[in-house]
Length: 404
Image 1: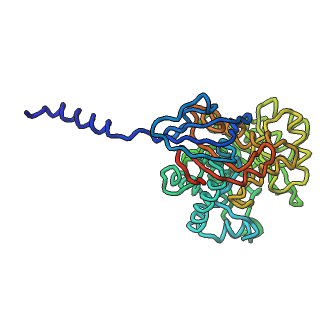
Image 2 (image 1 turned 180 degrees about the horizontal axis):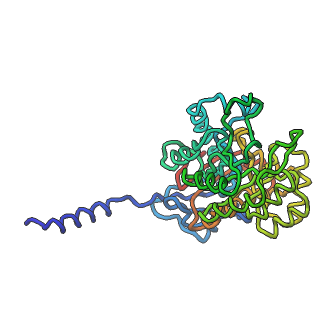
Image 3 (image 1 turned 45 degrees about the vertical axis):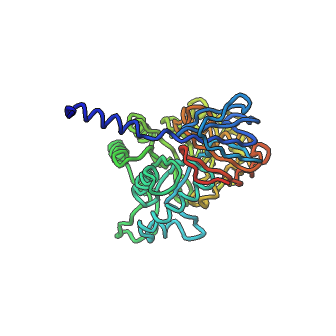
């Protein structure tokens, strides 16, 4: 009997659908689980496909049939760490200067390095990064993000900012004869129309957020001075927020921080010139602080104390690039050195960063329904923060990239 074409099509489609394999099930059995808020003992975690299916006391859970079990003796399982301030297209300045990278390293070379940086970052237990500027590499971060998402190269989830935004004359490279038009490390934008044009052009190129330099070292004596006016800042945030994106502000002066906060940015990066009044304003407006203790500034402990006293949410970001990729633990350790407890530092690098990124409903916690971005480290990082360097297992989206 010959089947009608429509019936045959339905039959073939049905067969195709039923032939799809069920999501893989992985059971993780560590000594402890840091769930993003507190430490739990005697827990196990069930991963189904790319998400956490269940997490709770072993005594009340059953290992699903057909599951692959990974026993992680002596470890703490926790959410994949988040790096809130990264530059995967840069490498440390003791290897070569920033200017050499921007002006003399071919783009293909920088991308090749970045693939290694992405792998090293993931293997260090960082499963998500917010990349805050390609520093002369245009939109190479957009392509790098796509390569990771398509499984072409291993790496963390990426939220990218493209070239970042500066006012004309404030950024670098500098020091060349005036007749030469030297490429800059960021997009120059001036006036309300100019800021709108640059912001929308960056959005059109696929960025996930806008980064603005609220100030930079362009004063008469090379000191940091504010860049965008309040009105320019306001319109940049309006354009970004209207497209569903947030704004991160590099800011090291009190005035630059103030303008950024009043404009409605999501985060202040660095913040070395912060004052109690500025941090109070940040807390009132829900602006997060990424102190980047790993780079520059001798007063990080003092400004962190001010920020915490004001109730500002502290987030984790090492400014990786100038800091070696794969050494991301340095920032979390530095938060502890500068006054946070190990538990507060872990929260900064997990649940706080996830909420800051607008991904607090799927990242930053060990919880049913969340993406299975998980890391196991030897020891208990709530007692000794350096334990986060002893990475035993790395899982991103249910895929195991490293295991004992």
